Length: 331
Ligand code: PGA
Image (cartoon, rainbow, N blue to C red):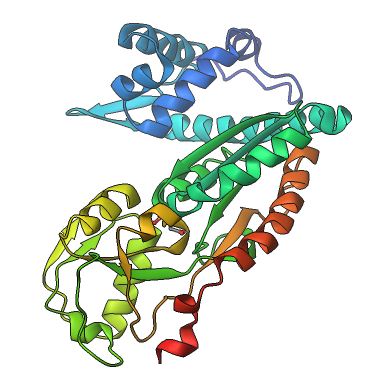
């Protein structure tokens, strides 16, 4: 016969569970979070610079302490179980709490010390480090981490709340974010230096026979150009994908085709090697935004850098003004 279930005392958590949860360590949670986020023990061990067996062992001890399996395996894929998903959410909340605590500690130290984590799309990598350099000279005690990725990469970092704020042109619609526009990011059409466009005012359809060099899928530059081409129903059939602004500039300079790039990606030296084309609707209008989660308080360092960026952008935008970029004149 089954013995009757023990009555819960209500307020007291069960002794066994309390004891086991005390065996958890922050390090185990950190390792678990990376495995869950990357969906792979192998990739997690690379990122964490640990061997795979030690990652597995830490996750196993964590599962034992919780008393539930955290992952299940189908073939080579690992998936979170229901308790695993709940723990992953908890880890992310803990992370957000910890960042808030760090920001509070930083704020107590004012701008004499503190951390600043910013991630930016690749179009901004020609601009932002210069601003950051000047900022760091003004506030030498602030420790800075800057991450550069394409739009998809920045969205992943935003989702995972890895940075104080982000810089990107096309903030994702429908996310609970604040996005403050702060500097134009015009997308220009470039060609090899000896390229002879048809005479007179032209539009992109007059160049449809040309080969177009495109950024990779996941790039915002690529997305903006694809959207324009779709809107205009342009039959651009000769396409080639190259994974970076630098590779595209070199390929255009070498005569491989035409491309659309951020005007910021073209230095004075680049402009001697490629030709900016005057084409109707170009430059395509884009604007960089400072993006962070709505309601997320910025640390003193992050708020100071955001203010600094606004001022730096004003000077930069007048430097970018060039006759070829005036959209009115191309029409
Ligand atoms: P990306 O930048 O092409 O590097 O993704 C896009 C952007 O300016 O937002």
